[in-house]
Image (cartoon, rainbow, N blue to C red; front, side, top):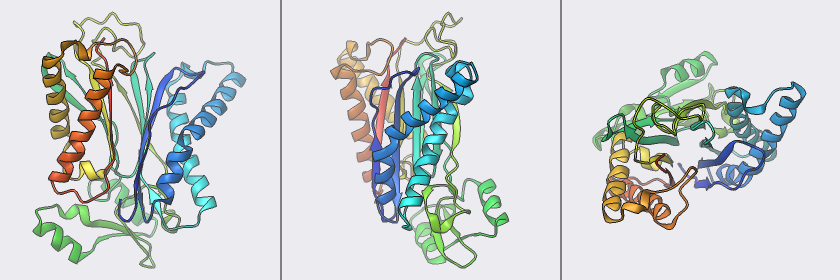
Length: 327
């Protein structure tokens, strides 16, 4: 982020929930106070939100995970609470993006919540097994350029979205897109943030809001034996023999590497290492934990960071890759 720092929250063991893992990436701007605050408190906050949801479910005499809304509410509530605690305790101009994913292997799905322009994508085998790869965005960037609905919301509240002409000229001369120069300003002229949603950024509220947007995505193709959302299997398809990959990264990657190129590189690395060691991708249900598959994910993440740097990224970069074994 601009004048900030990236942070990540890898998973840690969870109890009393069908969620196997929860991961997050944060990209600070205006300093690193907000991103560090969010990364440090993320898992504790998630567990508190989960406990609160379980108490409500018990009072209503229903299973916590009988409704999809519960998964989303816990993750959304976590990000909103991180914003509240930072904004209340630290009156600084800084803020942070956030993209978080809860992995539910019981139902074979990923719940993703995000604010800002850090991004999560799922890379999984295409319907023809090894023929092709499906790239599924799990998040939507909250930037003025690609989100005219967000611009409309900000203008309706009295804010302004405009580009700095000098910055725009530099970006266009370098072959970039003018839409990347759009920034959010208060009526007073304060601001200049290139995001419409973020944690923190007290001085830009209520224009820049911390409200997450969420998606739910099947880890595997719906007809895969182990990929049904009800966790029962038995689909009509043959079932893929290949794993899926989750990539979470800050805009230092996505500003210079499109989703398709990231997916292509991840799959190239998987395919080449599979040829060298066919057993490397074997595994049971749950995140890959053997040395070979862990090394695959680490190599993928490092390669994507290096590719972004070689493509001209000058931003801080955080990249996390998770491999989900084949059924």
